[in-house]
Amino acid sequence: MKNLTTMCTGCGAPLNYSETEEILACEYCGCQFQNPHYDENAPVIRTRKSDDADAVLSAVCGASTITAKDCSFGTPITGGKRLARARKYFNIPDEDNVYMIYDSTLLGSCKEGFALCSSGFYCCIDGTGYLSWDDFIQANIPLEGSVNVNEYTFITATDTGKLLSAFLQKLQNRL
Image (cartoon, rainbow, N blue to C red; front, side, top):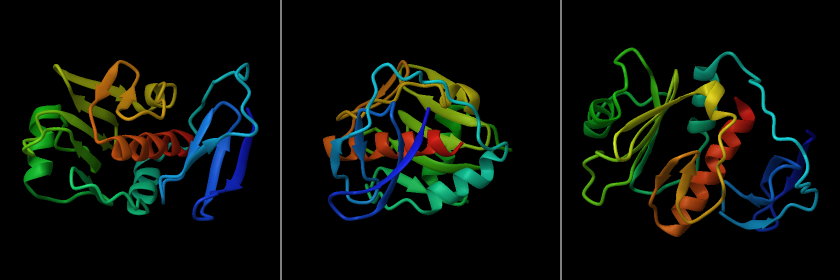
């Protein structure tokens, strides 16, 4: 699998990608375009690039420009009702640092959504779920109007879903 770099056609931001990604999405402006190097036959086998998930999460979440009101980012997040609710409903251990929370509920209860933590991807959608970082980097995350991570689907506003999916793909490539 080749790691490639190009510039966003919308804003000029740098994009890192591989030939296994059919659609490229800019994390900064949300612009989407066809990957000119897409190879549907390229094997999608990912290996961890870093053993320090906290450092990668801090860098990626700290640099995020996603401003949706249902998302919280930190390096890590250190307090507040959303963090307390995410820990409760997603079953996040107290010793885990939380770097990103997406609350997919309409009223902000955080009873559904996902969080990116030191030990992996925690979520609550029809029950709680968890993916270790080793499982997360193998997950299928298509760019759609909702956020899909393997069997977990989170309903979002279309633009937010595409931005979050692109953000999660970028995180996969950095871990």
